[in-house]
Length: 176
Ligand SMILES: CC(C)(COP(=O)(O)OP(=O)(O)OC[C@H]1O[C@@H](n2cnc3c(N)ncnc32)[C@H](O)[C@@H]1OP(=O)(O)O)[C@@H](O)C(=O)NCCC(=O)NCCS
Image (cartoon, rainbow, N blue to C red):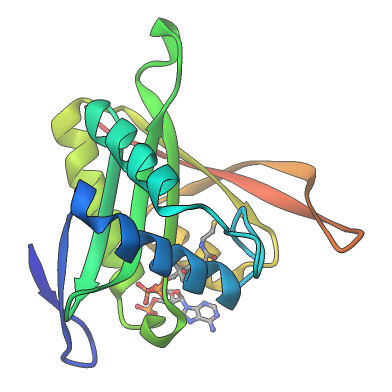
């Protein structure tokens, strides 16, 4: 699917493939260096290309999980993932993760990636998308609110960065 960003730049959103391992690695390295709102902080994302290939392979084998990327001129500039919960009674929901390179923030790419996931989730019969977001991640929170997510709770001490704890909100989107 090709979309035009607010700046007029064209981006393709598609599911990841094994050939993306190096590109995806470079993307995650850059994205984690630009923010500490992700699971890995600056300089901490040090996976090898073979590990990245294995990660992609597992994602592709599990039809109930999604890893989609936004590609601009052959470079990955955004990603969205959905990880299904384990257990038959939990199989109707899963966890979302999203990241966009800083130079593309505010262009509507985050919103488009979530819309892509919402359509995929509906087609797959997913009934609920959950996420956690640091309480001070204002940009992400307003994006999630705009996309229809609601507050469901708060996790204290969810992050520990350089000796400082940060709480997270639990947010969710029901799909009917
Ligand atoms: C959070 C993130 C995915 C948002 O992506 P994005 O492409 O910038 O999002 P969009 O441009 O689609 O939408 C951003 C929305 O956030 C809001 N927003 C934009 N700038 C903002 C700011 N400075 N403060 C608060 N909200 C802001 C607006 O509602 C905006 O929508 P609008 O431009 O239509 O008004 C991106 O900033 C990112 O990757 N951040 C680092 C990683 C991260 O935090 N991931 C989420 C972890 S839970």
